[in-house]
Amino acid sequence: MNGSLESYLRVNWNGSPESYLKHYSIEATNKRIKDAGSDAETLKVVREVLRQLGLTVKLSDGEYRVNFIGGREGTAYYTADISDAFDTGIAMAKEGLR
Image (cartoon, rainbow, N blue to C red):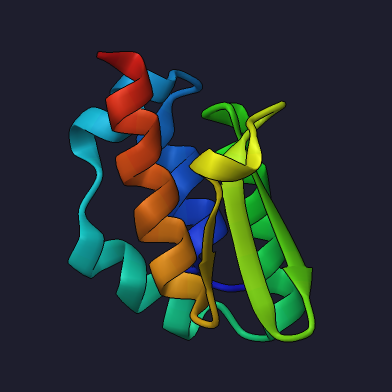
């Protein structure tokens, strides 16, 4: 994943959810998701980042499920698009940190 989402997130995140969310750019991150390479690599990075922010991402039958770790079904979000799953996870994390 040269110049990938993974390296971008690691450089710009600095290990702190608040720091990452403060500098998060939907457009820049979506471009990096599209440039990341394989779907499996992209999902791995998205899972890793959202997990650090207190969320999970699961893929089942072509649909991504985003939720808080230990969250109830009522807080889950479903989508077929990995970028949408990531953006929604970021929005959920921002709400959770307030």
